Image (cartoon, rainbow, N blue to C red; front, side, top):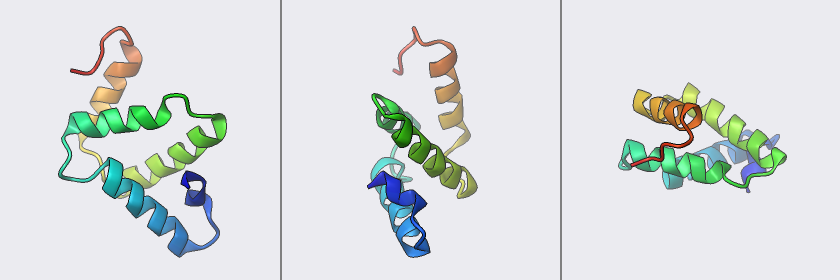
Length: 86
């Protein structure tokens, strides 16, 4: 379903984005949960899936879906892989 983020139909793109935002990045979720959800999407993802997740992230950044701490947690995870999320 994530590949539909590239649909030619704008309504489909919006529906896919809104669905992922609601399920994985809802404002009721903690920063830690949002970060874990994003990392979970990336774990074991194929190149095609990573490309779709990148597009999803681009839309999240444009829509200001994430708090700054999500970016900080991602940065720490990728720069210090031996440290896991608490």
